[in-house]
Length: 208
Image (cartoon, rainbow, N blue to C red; front, side):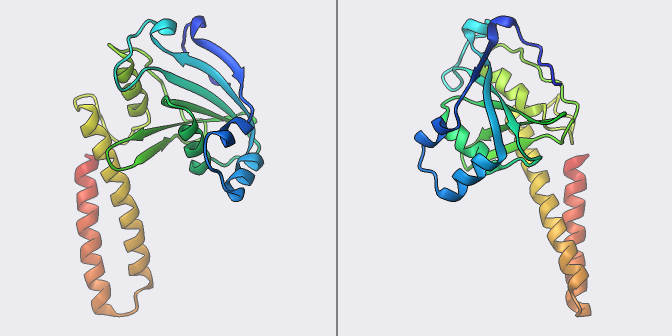
């Protein structure tokens, strides 16, 4: 079982009925069925705030919630996480539990979209719940998910932007590799390989 190093005064350990999340947003039948089928129990485990961990809030981050979600299936649905995020006005670190397996997730809302960071099952992640304020704690929590690069000398915005670029290039490369594999015309295959090489070089540069 997971263990988060947090003081006892941050503990809430309060069960939340699944129906509460349907009251906060318009939910179609498909999503409601997915929610009910995949989620066994939701517990509000911890609240990180100035009163519970002694770290001051900021204008953007007043508190951080930690939810434990017990799953019926070993599936992590971003649609379900989005529904919960819409219902709760604070950032949430998710602890996703399926039997003896544990994964973590958190979202980050930039100027364009909400991006989700989701760990592998049973991935060893060390969260740092310290900082000069809760915004820094939130940023530290997000960067804990970014393991493809050394972010120690980078500011937060640079780190998340670079990580998003790496993920985007990785998807583009996978698509191009499939196109090259399925392309029958030699000339078109050569052109696709040139683009693929360029993308691979860009990814290698970002990842180094």
